[in-house]
Amino acid sequence: MENEDAAYDSGTGEIAARERSPDRVATFVDAVFAIVITILVLEIGVPSDLNEQSFREALDEVGPTLIAWIISFLLVGMYWVWHRDLFNRLRAVNRDVVWLNLIFLVPVSLIPFASAVLGDYHDDPIALRLYGIVLIAVSLTKLLLYWYVHHRPYLLLAPASRRSLRIGALISAAPIVLYIAAIAVADIAHEVSLVLFLAVPGSYFLLVTLLRERPSTAADAEQFS
Image 1 (cartoon, helix red, strand yellow):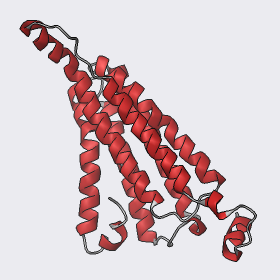
Image 2 (spheres, one colour; image 1 turned 90 degrees about the horizontal axis):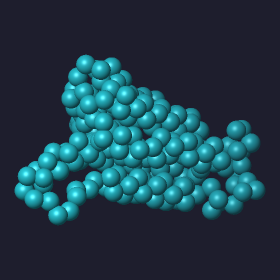
Image 3 (cartoon, one colour; image 1 turned 180 degrees about the vertical axis):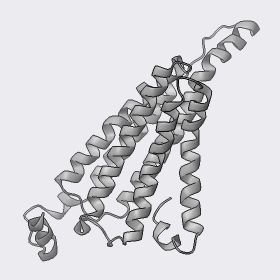
Image 4 (cartoon, one colour; image 1 turned 180 degrees about the horizontal axis):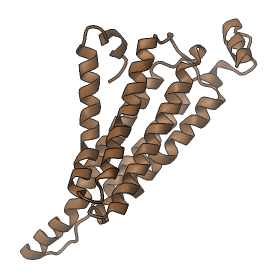
């Protein structure tokens, strides 16, 4: 990586600057997130030509799918916001960042599948555990991407402070605790498990808000939405 660092500093790197631009990677990731959200919506459907009784039964039947959609939509939105915040700080990408982004998108792309299983089998511990495992994979790959980028200052518009690195790592890793808890209670209380999944976006927003309002962390947390 020393050769890459020198190339950035001297401006004599062989790879054109436009190939190092983060814009195309960010655009591709945005498109994937948009497709993921679209697929989530397509999972919701109610049969047509129903009488009053069967309509109510259909709503009861589609309820778990709707709940799974709400949880998944908020989580996908949370991960998109995080990725947006990260790429707002990048001035360049290298091959590793491109591939780490693709690895990050693997579990992200599995969220609609896990959400569909959860909607159909919301009270089945296996469905809850599958959903949690997919989300843990998203968080771990997200954390890996964050760690990689912030340990290569030449990729950043401005260097990150140690406190900023700790805050970013905390925000990236915090959801894993709730995911593990949701998996742990899946066998005995599936409703609690669903609530824990739903609590993740709210806890993310609350954590970022508290860090941005706290005087000692406000400056470092300002980069997080």
